[in-house]
Length: 343
Image (cartoon, rainbow, N blue to C red; front, side, top):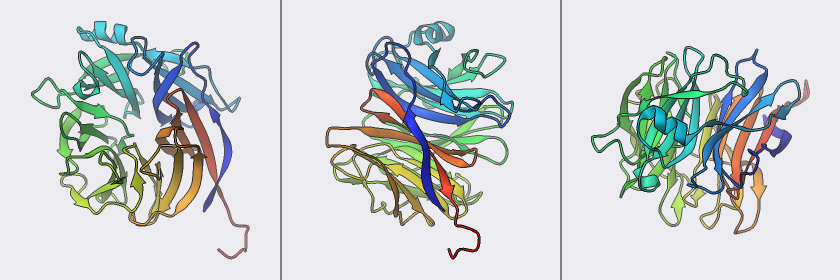
């Protein structure tokens, strides 16, 4: 089916905040007052001392996004962890088998993003309406002997049939390479596997073609880069690099989604020169990607980046950063052929 945009706009910012980046979309249960929750990080500037994790919910009754509020504060979280946090970023949300929202957040002490660790948070509030939503730390994920340093999260997890999930992350100190972390249905960490052997791929987005066959699409750090691809045929135990896609990549995050057998979608920046255009492409095999729609078209200095995509309530939801200042969104629905019409 073709897709048409049925609603779009910008998500409300926390009052007085000038910067926003790296949104994550989380569909809510069918009986919830909200259809969707979006998380991102916001403050005066990226890495600024007042950056926190913000959230907003798309209310079913009003068909509008609620006023944003902060749900994770680095000073409060640092006190609960017992050590200071210098910056927060890149929240990724997942609902576990107990119905609790989990957040995986990039967090640093001293140093820049390359000194990051992945912080696992879990909902501490009884309910998950935006007004009451709060989080507490589970732990810093135990990913290496070197103080778990230089691991970052970005893209949505792959939900598994057993209620667990696979969380894509990457390592970026000196070289960059992607990994897949496995969690059980209660959010217990069960181990990791390297996705690509190439030292310049990061921010993987993982989708399933079948229960055992998955693809990972990756950001390419190289000049004149392409979107990288790796594949597993044993449910993530082993991965093999595939040839790059023909799609250009300006060292920018991509987001992939499977909406059914042979129905893959990919949100990406299509030029090596700039993040000024954001496209949505589709594929039946994960190799060929014709354009579905240009989501945003700007100039060389514009930025439409870090897309997040999910399918919920019969439609496609997309959020993305605009110029590092705000978060935009679009919702699309299939255009069905009239009854009796030829396909």
